[in-house]
Amino acid sequence: MTTSRTGTGRWKRARERVLADAQASGLTVCPSCHVDLDYELGKRPNSAEVDHVVPHARGGTDEPHNLRVLCRQCNQRRGDRAGLPPTPRTSSAPVEPFPWSRAW
Image (cartoon, rainbow, N blue to C red):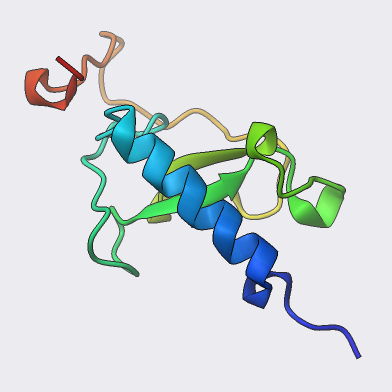
């Protein structure tokens, strides 16, 4: 019988460490779509979630170099695909993060 990887103590510790490191480094917007990340409330479109760069289903590990933080919507849209497609934009102008989202 196989158990869920997301229920293991190792994954939970890695997840908490990555979220804490992202907050400590000042990551306040999703690197993919630039929405403000919510580290407090879960299961909302802008909730901060840990994502595997190389999906676990494709041989990726729970090591820190393979983990990053995205908003829940981008994480779910990505699924187990190895690459995250660019977020569609309505303009060709580069997206600048909000001034209050930068680490001062």
